[in-house]
Image (cartoon, rainbow, N blue to C red; front, side):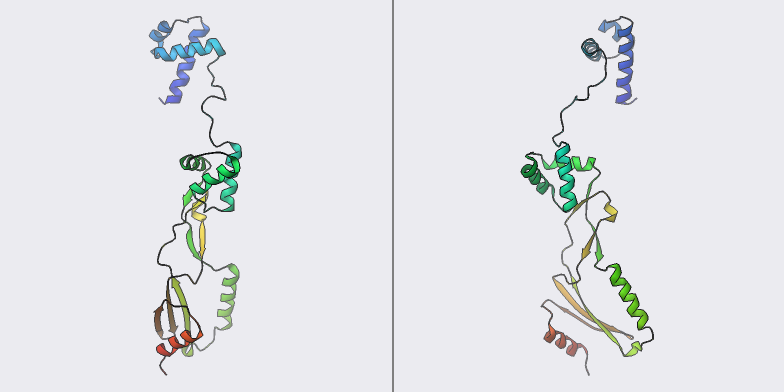
Length: 219
């Protein structure tokens, strides 16, 4: 039997004896085996309130009231990468409410927010994809044996650790820019396969690009 069901059973039993005029704590205890302290408390409650229902105001008030809860939702909608410490500071400044980060975390969990790392996705919009397909169709019959494709790419040495608050964690994504620091790589391919590969860390400009081409394409 769960704690809630047990409590309801106690309420029913004590109320029954109260209604038939048996108000002795020990008599009720011998008949029901309910702890003496529980019976005493419930009889006292029946005398003062007339029932065993909990009042709506029972328990300690939450530190995060409706106003603060609404403010938290607004903060996250504006920037879902905000940290717990930043949220606590915002509540102090805007709501004059001092709340710990653990309290904020529990409250956000009750609101079904989760702290997650967004999935990394390339910065390709539907329009970009459409143009690429159109270009491919327009050049479908080209002689690719005489064509070389070159491109540069940047690799970030440290993974993204900026977490976000979200109710749909699987849909949380972060667009990654093409030219990130710190390590850059130039490469080229042709119909026959890989042509050149050149890692670098300096800024790419026209002179350096020509230098890369000259070192990888020998005439």
